[in-house]
Image (tube, rainbow over all chains, first blue to last red; front, side):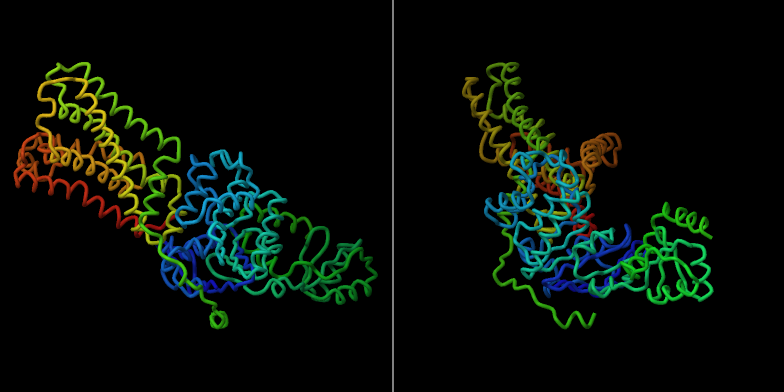
Length: 307
Length: 259
């Protein structure tokens, strides 16, 4: 129901979003995954017309967002939970939304209850809210108009584990009722748990997209041996490429092949199993390591120690 | 994305009507009172209006306690505070980043801005009505001869023009700067600096009634019939100091990226 078609956005000479195309289908939760600064938020702002695209266009249910007469009734949007007037109470934030959309005031109470903000919390000013409470308020605001499409930027950010669990249930149920959900995150495990479809973006470009089942399909194997160094040498002789992973090793090849090498070399294995995660995780780590500088020297040091 | 465009369920908008301007205006009026800061600004306008009339009442001779004098006394403090109200109505959306929500719920941004104009004018009107009420009360209590002399609907009209133009100028500067401090400082400093300059520099002095808003608004204070030239002066000054910044600010907001 959301169609992004060849969208690009340049700031001066900097290409923030580079020819991005994807679609979000009804009944599915689509996770928009990428490190900070990858272009997720810019793409989402372009969807709702807050940022003009340099090229390409977005339609929502076949319409340009700006052409939807009372968009709050069709598309629930949460772009930044902190973008609320600090001096307004939580209830007032929802009331302004409800008045704009032309909804009865009981809708405000229903939404407060849905996101578990108590009556006394709703009376407090937003500046006294924790990030988690702001996220709940933002989700309540997005759901006010009972929309059939949700666009949420980092909705799990700041929620505690119980809150993330709650949101997962909420969005899953929403999608099961036929809703379309697009949510972004910079954390793989977060999206992995909620999303049915995944779109991976890095430096403005989509690097992978597909169903979660496809993308997370386990490839390769994880192995841990008593004779760690010996296994490394043996695998290297067989031309099997491995990378350190925790206390063991990860490889692209199937478990059976590593098992054979170990058996032939009398190596005692403590663990040998199909790798969980997949190439997606590696790809994501690679994308992330470019932007998170602090991770790189650590990884180099570990490799150096093992070499 | 050819595969995806194949199945593209459309959103049925037939049952949805456009958000009426009345509702958008109601929302903007609500924003004028729903925080402590905005509420206090309104209370301050009310209290100072009452206070200035009381002070004038106590210091004026009985013969000076006329309705037009009382109204005149409220012009200055209201003229200072109403534009601030206009400025904040715009800039709070950017300093508090609520524009993100406002323009998402109403993507036709010009409609939000028009609603702000209506709301600000409504607040200005309320301030004038309050001033008229308190001034009338003071006039009755004052007991001056000819207390209602020299006052007619046209004088109230001029008063309204003055305050409305102040509120709109505030909105305009807010739109132009999108920042409370910059807009307020510029609003107070720039026209005054220009007035001083035009009173000192002779070429500009001649043109002052046409280009200096303060000079062109002067006849609004005097209870005489304004000549057509004076009306043209007023139109010209208002075009330069209210309409032009409003149009430029509006263009800026319509094109801005909202983050």
